[in-house]
Amino acid sequence: MLLKTLDELKKFVATDATVDLPPAIALALGTVETSEVEPLLGSTLHAWLQAQYDAPGFDAAGPSVAARLLRAVQAPLSRLGTAAGLAGHQATIDNTGVHILSTDTSKTAFPWQVNQLRDSLERQGYRDLDTLVQWLEDHAGDAPELQAWAISVAGQRHRQELFTSTADFQQYENISSSRRVFIALGQVRRRLEHFELGRVLGLDFLQELRDQVRDRGLTSDNRNLLRTYVYPALAALAIGHGIPELGLRLADDGIELTIARVDDSNAKEADAGLDQLLLGRASKALVSAERYLRHLTDYLDRTASATRFATYFHSPAYTAPNQPVVPTNTAESRIYKFC
Image 1 (cartoon, helix red, strand yellow):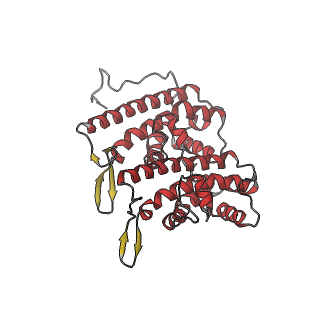
Image 2 (tube, rainbow, N blue to C red; image 1 turned 90 degrees about the horizontal axis):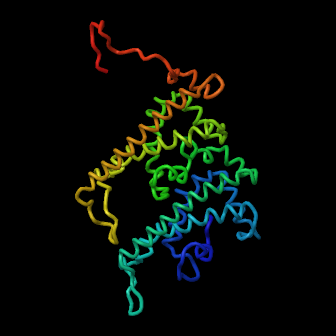
Image 3 (cartoon, rainbow, N blue to C red; image 1 turned 90 degrees about the vertical axis):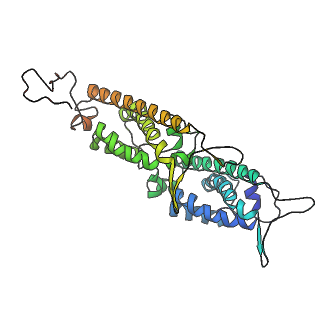
């Protein structure tokens, strides 16, 4: 494990625990490390960092690459691990059953207090995961191990689509900088990339953009194209299609409504009329997306050439500007077409 002591936990989580990590939280730390942290690092970098951490005389507060990476890892690990372990930490199990703490001077917190603490820890913990990925990106050239990470499966997993981070998406659509929302919209974005952007850009040019994003080698023209047209369109499309899709969840025991008004108990059903507000929000996003896509097509058709946006220029998606419009129907048409 990459976090072993209570003192390390206390650097990121306020706790009055003494001596050792609480058992339920210690178990949750291991689970979170396996499910959330290790996939971001990849097995090779994770093993290297573990070996550095376990080495005699390792200075976790020092300036070395391993120490700085460890601190970036321990932030999400401690907060998400504590959040995951709260439920088990609230009760003890022994030979006689399950018990909670209740004395004249101390008692178990109310459920709403536990929920607020869990939500706060999870919110910050997922932001810490974003910070960890950005740290790895920013320092990819600082050590051979980080260079290897950058070209590994783990280092390119978040670069398999055009949007690579929560912060990038947040620039175009407000998702409260939530990594959980960004991840939840991932399937929607990837589907829309293929069907909507592929239709406008052509699949070959779309793949060129994807390859350059993955390899961290965007040309100046392609970078500007993404920021000015593609990202705004894709973000708006994701919101427009994601709102109705994420409103329902396919659970192991059926289909659940996942729309609720958040309050202290987080248990109220959706307000009357909320469906109309959501429909309006989704519709506005789709209208914006369609406008961006039209602007994208107009810009590419005006600027593409054999030397600029060449892949698009040579694709069926390209339409030469100022082409005469061939009318669908004329006075001599024997059959009139309506589409």
